[in-house]
Length: 99
Ligand SMILES: [Zn+2]
Image (cartoon, rainbow, N blue to C red; front, side, top):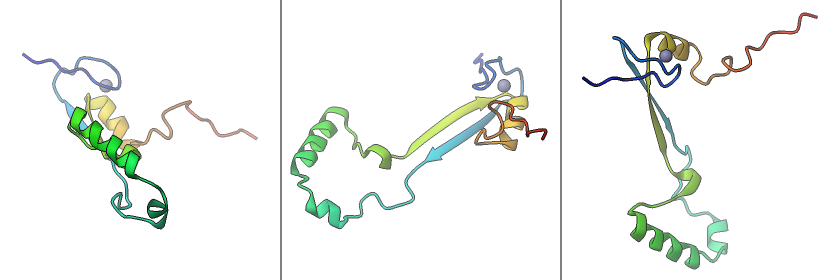
């Protein structure tokens, strides 16, 4: 039987497993050609990119490359995650100044 561990707390997930997916992708058009692109000499970059594609079989667009993450969560961590998906309050346990 396949066992899953929670990606947040590291505990074995006993029964209820939750999956969260996070996708990061550019909200602009990475293929859009700007004047800056036209000014630059892209030939060497393009030939490097093509060489890379032959090696890896994929096109590397650096920051424009969509990324997706998938995490297994236990019920407790899922509850916490859903409250604060970006972890803004998770780290540091910030306390407001008492002044
Ligand atoms: Zn957990």
